Length: 135
Image (cartoon, rainbow, N blue to C red; front, top):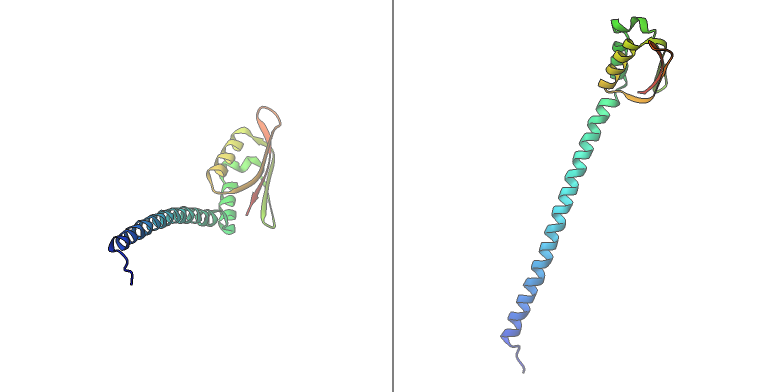
């Protein structure tokens, strides 16, 4: 009966341990990559949920927009507001430059989903405005 030399068994065990170490190292690397991708996806989903909270609140959008439109400095602007389905249309003809600056700064500093904005200068002091805001 032939016997297996103990040196062969030792070499086999060493080779097995080296291969096992390489596989474990690769598994750790892929685990770290998956963890970092999960972290990025988690951050993106958190940002999306926060943006949804800000932009998807119809009542809040209408209330804050109404407050801007009723501001005392915009009385002379003759702004017209029309709410149709999921959009608000705002228009004005002959709006003064200062009123337009104030109105645009209030809208751009707020959280509104502005779909379209069209401003045409009628003369040096007045402009017309057409705007569409999604609810």
